[in-house]
Image (cartoon, rainbow, N blue to C red; front, side, top):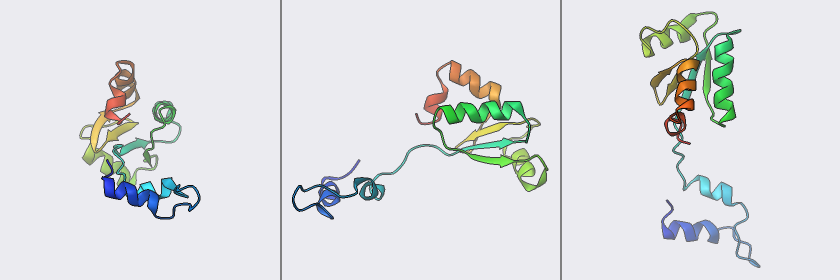
Length: 121
């Protein structure tokens, strides 16, 4: 929420003299509005159909996510195993650091109408 003085300043600064409008309200709002959308992360492997479906589900909802490809193993695979104990399959979807499982899990949440609140939608 924008406090009244900040709101007035938002439109007063850089306002068009003839119409009193802010030239770039989106740019001005950036400093005043905090985004509440959670951070979504997904661990994937190349060629994994369930990974493709999980990313497609998130894409269809317009949810940005950070993808970590662990096809070749390495430190990101080890990170996944530490963050999601017992995980042996991909994808692994995390929202604000909380593991929500793979595609079947997030698809079930979606079908039950419970995924949108988790994603901040």
